[in-house]
Picture 1 (cartoon, rainbow, N blue to C red):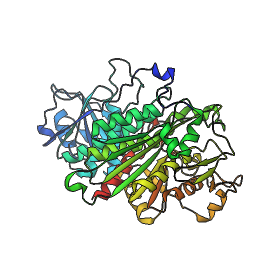
Picture 2 (picture 1 turned 120 degrees about the vertical axis):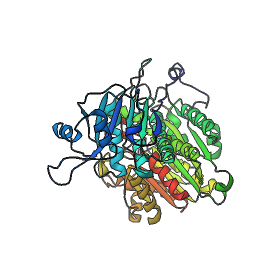
Picture 3 (picture 1 turned 90 degrees about the vertical axis):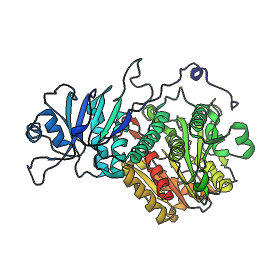
Picture 4 (picture 1 turned 180 degrees about the horizontal axis):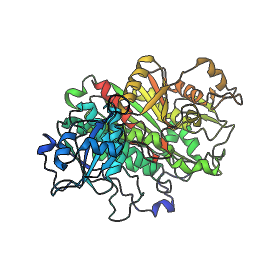
Length: 521
C-alpha cells in the first residue's frame, strides 16, 4: 500500500475547480407598487389554482400591483396562456414593459402555498429566469419563516451548477440576484441561504470527477471548509489507521495507490449555547471511487461512482452549516475515506477484516465496501467520542433504490422517537425518507463461522439487502441511539426536477441540518 503522501500524477496535473457562487439574495421591504426595480430583468408574481374546475387562477401577493405596473389584465392573460396555478409551473406573460420596469413578467403557480409548493415555485422561477439575470418576486411576501426558507432554498438550488459543467471563462451559470419584495423575514432568508449552501457544497464535492479527487483531496477540502467556518479537524492517515486498527478502511483502500483516511471535523458552540449542548456524531461513507474491487462492477455501473462519497460530503456540509447557524449542538463529523480500486493488493472474498475495537467481518463481496468503512467509523465514535446520538449517511445499497426508487432515502432508527424526529425534518426540508424495519431474525443471515459477522447474506437470494446492511452496522454502535440513512436512490438524479439538478443531489444535508435545529429548539 502507498504512503499517505503519494499523489497520482494524473491528479497532480489537474487545475483547481472553480466553485459555484450563488445568486445574491436581497430583501426589498414594502409593497411591489413602491419598489424600485430599475435594472431588474424579470418580475415574477404568484398565482394559485382557482376554486372549482375551470375556474380562473387566483392572484397572490403582488399580482394586482404587477397588473397595474404593466397596464395589463392579468386574469385574462393567465387564461389566454393556460396558466394553471399548479405548484412548480411558470409562464411568461406577453406584456408591454414601460420604461424602468423589468422587461419580462412571469407568473408562478404556488398550489396550496405550502413550503413544499413554494420551494417548487422558486425552483421553476430560477430555471425560467435564465443565466445572468436579476430577478424580483413577491413569492415570499407574507409566507412566514418556513415559506421564506423554502423560496430561498428552491431558487438557489435550482440555480446551482456543479463544478466544470458549462464553466467556460466569463459564462454566467445562474441568475445573479434575487430580490424578495414585500414582508419577508430576513432571518429566514439567512437560514435558507445556509441550507442551500450546505446542499451545494455536498453536491460540488460529490460531483467532482475522481481523477481530481482521492481521499487526500477530500481531506484538503475538509481543512479548507474548517478554516472558513472555525471548525477543528483531526486526520488519521494510513500509518495511524494501521497503528490503531482501522481494518475496514485499510482493507477497502488496500488496492489503490491513494491511501485511505479518517477525517474528524468538529463544531463546538460557544458561550451559553455550549452549556448542556447535546453531542451528535454523524459518520459518512466516503468512497471517492468504487470499481467494486475484485468484484468488479460492469462499466455502466461504474460511471456514476464518483458520487459514492456523497455521505462524507453531506457530513462535512452539515458540520459547516451548524457552525454557520451557530446551533447550540455539539457536532462531530466523521469522513471515512477510501478508494475501492482493483489491484494486486485489493482485499479478497474470504478475507477476515478486524475493525477498530476488535469486531471482525468475513468478506464475501468486495463491492459491499461501504459498510466496512462505516463499521470502523461507528465503532470509533462509540468507543471514544461518547455521542448522545449517532447517525450515519451513505450511498450504501442498490437494494434501497429497488425498494424506494429515486425520491426517498431508507431510514433506520434504533427507537421510534429518533425516527419521528428525522421524519419531521425530512418533511420540513423536502428530502423525503421512508422508515424500514430492523429485523432481529435476519441477523442469522449474517452469521459467520470465521468472524463476528459476514459482510452480506450467507443465503443466495435472501433479499432484504438494505435491511441487512443496516443490521450489519448496528453492532458497531454499541447500543447507542442510532439512525442510518441509505441515500443510494436520491443521492443521484438522472434529470432535473424542481430544486434538484442532474447528477449529485447533496441529499441529506438539509434534512440533517433541520434535524439539528430541532434538537436546539
